Each structure stands twice: as structure tokens, then as C-alpha cells.
Image (cartoon, rainbow, N blue to C red):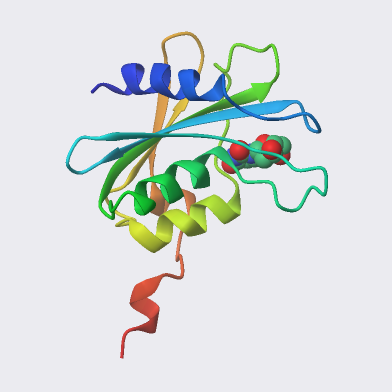
Length: 138
Ligand code: THU
């Protein structure tokens, strides 16, 4: 699947975002190494802090389905009513969750960057010197 196609999948997931407080909707499409796609949207809460970002929704859904090896994720977002074509980069917490399951040198994060244009980063580029499972190996 191309990055452009994956962005379209993330836009589909964004349609399910539950954002009555921020009105900022986000969608994610996460590709496993076996080629499956898992979807995520942000889900907010009246008490605010339980809010789950789109990226983590996608990761936790995939892990719950037995998946632990990932290739790339596309993320789109913006205020409700916008087209989602402006870059919406993952928050720090979501980058840390990616660090738990992904090889920072190889896992790719794809963002929309205008109509039919994309940006692509490695996890290492977005989380340099990240702390992860390898740091706890003896
Ligand atoms: N949000 C995401 O879903 N992903 C991110 O990486 C950044 C922020 C959500 C959380 C909250 O529902 C809304 O965007 C505004 O912060």
C-alpha cells in the first residue's frame, strides 16, 4: 500500500473520532509487517485525562489482536470540518508507545502534507535517543 493510499485509510478512521471537547479529530492507519491494517481514532472523555489518541487506539487494538510487529502508520488530523491535509504529528506519549513495539530505525510515520502529498519520518527522527525495551535488558 502506498503512503497516499494509507493516508486515505487514516482519513476513514478519523470519521469515527469522538471529540466533543477539543473538536480536534484524528485518524490513524497502522500497517503490520504481515500487511494487515488496524485503525484508530481519538476518543475523548468528560474528565479529559482518559482521552486516548488515534495512534494509541490503533496500536492497542492491534496488540489485543495478537500483532506485535509493525511497518508504518499514517496519521491525519485537524479541527473538525478541516480536510486533514495539514501535517498532524503524533504526541510524545504516542511516540513512546511506538518505541515499545517498533524498531526506531525502520518504523515509518506518514503524515499528510497538502493535497495528495505526504511526509515520511522514521520513529528515530521523531524520537531521537528514545528510551525503550532495550534499555531494560540485562
Ligand atoms: N490527539 C491524537 O489523537 N493524536 C495525537 O498525536 C495528538 C492529539 C488528540 C487527543 C485529543 O483528543 C485531541 O487530539 C486534542 O489534543
